[in-house]
Image (cartoon, rainbow, N blue to C red; front, side, top):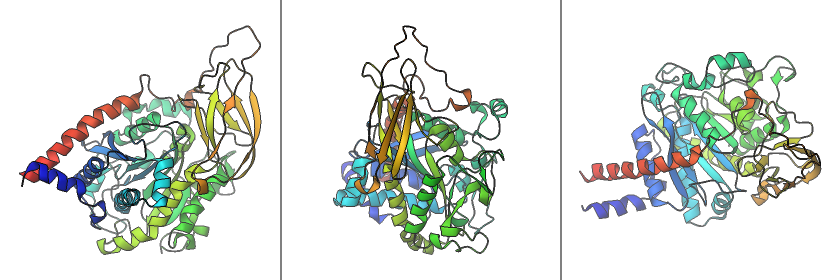
Length: 454
């Protein structure tokens, strides 16, 4: 068979033909290459780094502008297989990729609307080394930890652990996979996310930890955006075939409405969902999707159908609330302006990105915003916020600032050192990373094709 014919065959093999089974890390890599090569207009494959053993952590971005951020288009992500022996998420995210591409190519309204309005990033495995070590025991299989024997969901900076303790463990000392995700969060303005796990069936929301002080309400550790998190968790549980029942597993629950506050369920330090929320301004849930960590392969089709509607409905919730830009007195987008909502005192204030953008996920209602930027008057405005997901767009509102009347030039406000995690690297780390990845994907695809030819 000629190499050109093989190349065409590879490009046009329907993604729907992906088998319901557990694919190896190399098979996932080849599948992502195939989808990316066949759909360059709506997909972009890139790596956020490597595992301890040097395996690439591949992410597939999907959307109308998959290679880079577009102002006004929110960034969403799904992450699976953080614990190497919790494997259903790998299968679900591969199927989700195929479903999104198929729906777009078939011009189905739901897929067109989703990909036209959202940039979706999918990381099928955060812990490929752990997966390689996993066995198929339902609850007690090995493979949970990374190659260094570390639980990645205990390895992130923790807002409740105290600044001094965090400084003792700098970023370079953290696990490779954790560093990769931290860098990823610095390079993109993620708005909404979910982390797919196994071993229970419940949607868990922040906080996972507590200082046993202001944040505690009863046995729960609540965030300033607790109403939004509860709503998001219920969106998933009630769009799932049965999660909302809350009593699906013998060894966990019951969970009212199929949701739980993470700390109320069990406290943990160094979790990824708290890190996303506190330092990256990204609201993240932990989705526990199967009683068995390693379900039998013959159960996979049904488990996909149980979760398909919920996975899509959850992405759509990225269009809750308000989005827009902040402009300074000269009409220039204002980076690092603080955009606060009255009554929601976040540990790390939400700030605008390098494009002057802000995104605030809020339920319908009236909210008072306060915008603060060095050298400018504080701006306070009250907005009436509708429900955006049905229109695939949050309410759009720009804030126009006025310079202070003082003749004294004020220096830009310094970030609180505990919150200095959201600014992108100088020189645009995401851009340089994408350029490198383009070469990697190109050479990788050639390698895959060559191996098939040989």
